[in-house]
View 1 (cartoon, one colour):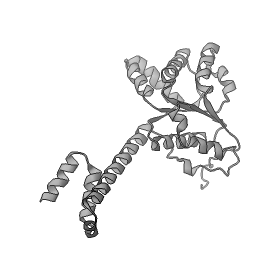
View 2: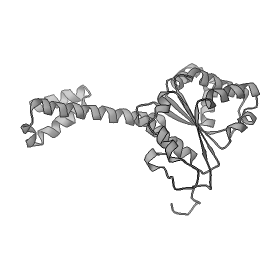
View 3: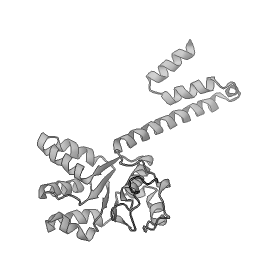
View 4: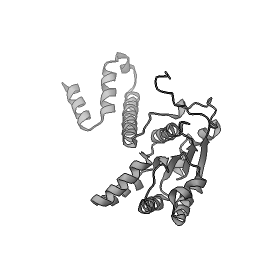
Length: 245
């Protein structure tokens, strides 16, 4: 009865890892050979792991990645100029810690989105808050937020995001007001967050995409000057319909 009361109290305190570890120790008779300090240390470690795993699960859920990708699954054999040394440099997520950016360019099907999601997933594993957006959806949400009065709330959430992933930049024509919203977002995040952008267009062509040269200069200045550049080449890695992977 005492053990059941203890378990109930541990779960009520949300010490689920401690409760699970305590139950496991009760099921293992050899645990009595360990000292109290040793058993207590094992319980603390179990609670720590449970909290870290729960936090990671929440960060991954919040990120809303398009692909369940990870750094370990990247394919360096494909002829697309993906450099292992550069990815290993980025895989420790120090670029996020120091509020640097990453720009991934390349034609359709070269793996830009998968690479972005893999870098984002590694940032989540390293404790950073990440959010993935297709560029068109991000701008729709910003426009809608102006209309319903929630713009400050949305911009606040984006400001608190350590890494903002924007996929397929430049595919849709945007208004000057939308680009100015984006510029304001970059200004707010400068020095406090990182941005990863994928695009089919080289940065030299972004002026044509944005239209207003002044706004284009300002956006590029905030994105490019401290950015790691990755250019993917080669044929599409997507399988035609009906062809097995």
